[in-house]
Image (cartoon, rainbow, N blue to C red; front, side, top):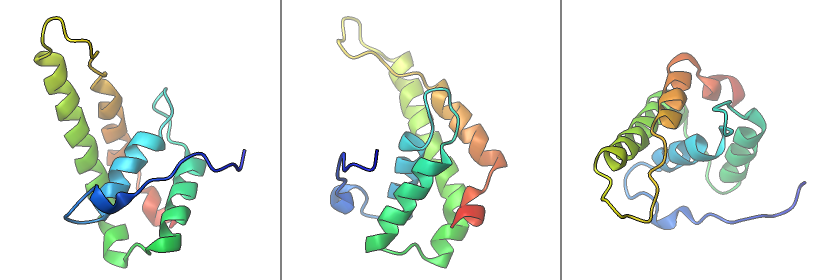
Length: 116
């Protein structure tokens, strides 16, 4: 639709390595509800990010491991929430298997090498 729909301020996201913020965002935004990778969303995200800050060569090379680590982090958090969900809680835990499939995707694909 080519319309502005949101703004992300990465300022408070991560105090360590900035590529982890990108990995979390790629995993959350660049897969559809069926777990299929959306290359158009990925390209838009990375191009938009690099308008303000270029990813270094080392960050691009490390991204497959960082993406897997980010997927594992959300997978474990969701699994914990499923196992230790308090009775009567209003929040419904999200399915951890969504991130298991994202992790599996990252184990077999290195789209940063191809696309960036």
